[in-house]
Image 1 (cartoon, rainbow, N blue to C red):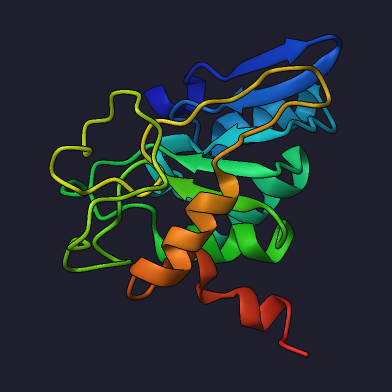
Image 2 (tube, rainbow, N blue to C red):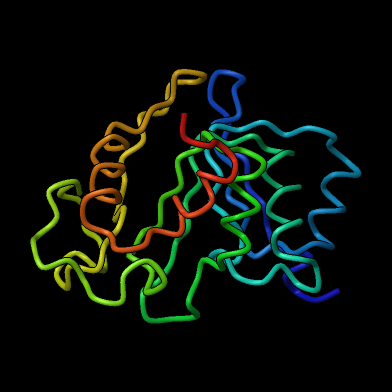
Length: 185
């Protein structure tokens, strides 16, 4: 056990509906403690723990599968810096896609794993809100706007973000495993 095992995990609830789980730096030990107390924790949004890095001593893919099965998020956010730690880990993303294949995955900045070079054109899918990577053209999802309205919580820029990923990102890890889970018909 270390400090990540007792990291704060915050749930945001509106109109009796769990809108988001901010999972801090929780690891496998902390997650097991939560599961002992709460057997199911559905939320629309999951800010993934540890920026998508290693979850302590646990297998990253299994950890991601268990966490996403527990929360069943529709939107998963990785708050990352393009130039630090090489997150999110590929096996984390694989675990997410296996457990919640229809969830939208968004990184705040464009991971180097997805694109070694930055897009040459300025992004048109981002909000006008401040984002660390905006001036350097290193945003993927950037700063997003959520309309919190209980079970009708929404994220308006999702379609634009998907279009950006498909058209401008060389090898997006958030789409890498989709063909395994949902074969093309």
